[in-house]
Image 1 (cartoon, rainbow, N blue to C red):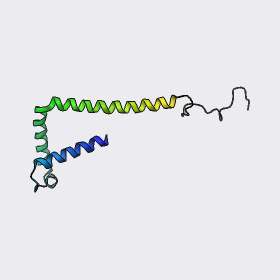
Image 2: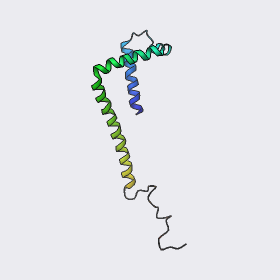
Image 3: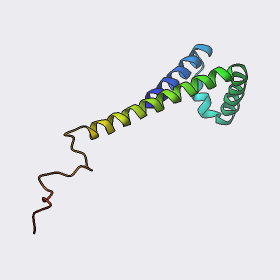
Length: 105
């Protein structure tokens, strides 16, 4: 998930750098005027959302589905490895430390 966040951050930074003039340091402006920056970002989000909302939603759902599928596949692979013959999981008793049923103490 961190890779996705880094990709989004990088894409947003590149988009802002491409749109804004080179001599404008938008990071400094956001730091100096955070409320105005938040209002402008929200307004931009509304405009983009109204124009491309369905496409953005489909992309978000596809990304979330891929992440869930990947995590589920990893979990199922771990479960399959633990259930494989000869696997030593925490639930399987170890024959060397378990006393036999006919032994008395």
